[in-house]
Structure formats: structure tokens, C-alpha cells
Image 1 (tube, chains in turn purple, brown):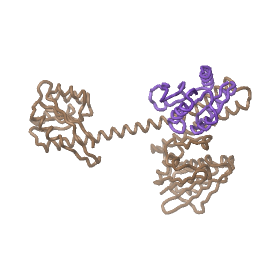
Image 2 (cartoon, chains in turn cyan, green):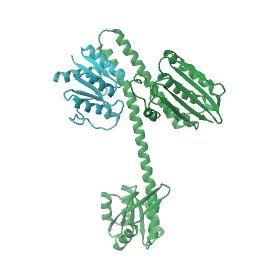
Image 3 (tube, chains in turn red, blue):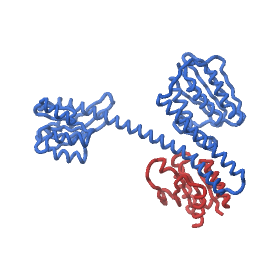
Length: 126
Length: 372
């Protein structure tokens, strides 16, 4: 069982993830904005964070990832994004300790089962 | 100040020096583009030397002697016209014969300068070439900006379509694999949400078509004298089920006829967008009020709601394509982000405009002015 914080501004995407993850026995919290995520994180640290890049702004997720990393350096962050397609720029994100302190970058769409497996792998490694 | 690169190609050192002396402090003032142009000067003594220099940094204007040792002026001209079509070549001819002029024009020369020429004659010729190059440069910039805007629009459109697709795909996978347990209500809910999100996509596609049609001027318009009270009443009827669901009171304040020579479909589109926003962003049990006033040469439509309202920052971005206020209060509200772009574009068709007054948690009022 892992405690998971899901951060994405799409209610349905979150709901799908939540249903599957809870069914697999995980404890899931959801935040629909960076601000909400900050509030949730103040009340306790989960085992893993799933974070979307684009929320209120195109890069809100990046900023939040750096903040989370500064607060809890050991907390793994899985970052989901369609940003490299949306921007039309053929770059690949590489996790980077300072600029992009995330455990893994997942290209959207990330289907619920695939996310669950990724989360379990990540938490298992810890 | 803009800078143009100019290269003089002549085997006579005196000629090269003379051109550089005449132009090195020369500035062209272009009134039609509101700017000044200076020159970055370079010189070559042979055609071969010129081509080599052009290859590393092509000038905007080439001042090219017709008669050169080795590679001839016409041969250089031909190579330039083929490989650097944006460059303008001014041929320097010792004998301004008609045949040379025709031969050079055929190969793509822009202008001629007959030897011997005075610094003023040189400047006047260069001025003409410079203004043409600057106009071409500005046209290229504009085209680039347009491509950029289009690219951004399409990127955002793609993002707006992919979000519901991802949500639906996620739900479908869960339903197929039964990966959310055995409660049938959960699956029914996922199906319902999938339908809602599909409708959202359809709405986006329809809005996009509406918007493109308005912008392209392809919409066939049928302008007739309309009493907008009829159109408003119809729009209120259209929105009534959604308003009833939120228990909203919808009021119409239109004591006088509000006549406008207008296309009914355009007016319906405009009203439906305004009213659907007033319902969507309202609080349960709130109120929607439509005020219709005819004055002088036009009609003012005001649609007020008692909804969540907007901050000044949100208002300032409101009319951008795909802009949607994103916060906890709007999370469950679906929209294409194109509705108000459409409203504004329609208002512009009637030489009017849209303004908005809003206060967070109190509500918003949209006022559309339409003129004859």
C-alpha cells in the first residue's frame, strides 16, 4: 500500500486514476491545482507524487516539482505531460537533479493501469 | 534602426572605395515603414571572390560591375538569382546599352547604375533598393508572426482536444479491464462522464467551425430587420433546462422593441454563448438577467449573472482564444474556451464590441453593443 498524491487539473483523469489505485489498495489524495497540492503537502508527506506539467500555467508543474523537491528531497515525483507534443518541440525531458528533480517523466496519455504499475515500481524501489 | 548589408563588386579599387565612402554614413529614412536604415558595407574585386563572400554572409543588396575579369558580372548575377533569390542586384554598367539592360534584367537584375555616376545618383538607386528590401523583410516578419500565431492556436486546440480524449480513454480502459472493482455504479458513472466529455469535444469542434466561419467571411449572411426581443426570448428558452437544473431565475428586461438589421443565426450564436456562460458560471439558486436597450444607431444587450465572477487578471485574458479561468470554482465547468472569442468576433461584424464588469463571488455582466 502506498500513499499517493495525484496533481492534475482534469477531474476525470484524476477520478480514473483514483478508482484504479484505490482498488489496488492504495491511499489516494487528489489536488487539482498547484496551490491545492501545497496545502495537501503541508498536512503530510505521501510516498509518491504524480504531477502534471500544465495546470494553471504551461509550466506550473515544473515550479511545483522544484518546490516539492526542496521540501522533501526523498519524495519521488512522477511527472506526466503532453507538453513536448503540445509545444511541437521534439525535445526529450531528462530528469535533472536541479532543474527537473523528478523520478520519471511519463508522456500523456498515461492510462490508469500503466500509471498504477509505474507507481508500484517507484514505491517498491524506495 | 534596421541594417542592410551591401556588397560592391568591382575590379577597380577606386570604384570600391568611392562607393564605400559615399555610403558608409548614409542613412535612408523610410516614412512608409517609419524607420531608418543604415548599411553594413563589404567589397569584392572579382566575381569569384564575391561568390565566396556571399556564401558565408549574403548581402541584401549587391552592387555588381558588369565587366569583371574572370567570372563575368552576368555570371555572378545568374548564380545570385538562382541561389539567393531574396538578394537585390544593381548592375553597374559602363555603357548603358539596351542589350546589356535586357540581358541583365532577364537574369534577374533589379536596377542599373551607369558609369560614371555621382554619389547622389548612387544614393538614390540604393535608397530605392533599400526600401524594397525593408518592405520585403517586414512582409517576411509578418508572415512568420502569422505562422507563429497559427501554430500556437493549433497547439492549444490539440491540447484542448487531447484532455477529454485522455480522460475518456482512461475510463474506457478501466471499464474494459474492470479494474475499479465490482461496484456497477462506479462504472455507470464513468460511462456518464465519458459521454459528457465527448459532448465537450463536439462542442469544441462546433465552436471552432463557427469561429472559423465568422473569421473567413464565408458565412452566408441574411440581414433582415429583427426585433432582438424575439431572439433573446428564444435563447432564454434554449437555456431554460440548464437554468432549471441549477434552480436559476432568468429575467428579461426589454420594455421596448430592439430593432437591428442582422443575421438571425449570428444573433442566436451570440446570445446562446452569453447565456450559456451566465448559467454555467452561476451559483445554484442564482439569477440571470438580460437587459435589452435600443439607442440611436444600435442595440445594447447586457447579460448579468450572480456567479463566481472574475479577478481583474482573469478579465484581462478573457477574450483570448481557449482562455478559461482555471481555479477550484471552475474545475467542474466544461467549455471550449472559444465562446467569448466568438461573441467578440460577432460583435465586430456589427461594428460593436463586448465589455465586461466583474467582481469575484458577486457575478459578471457582459455588455454587447451591436450597431446598424
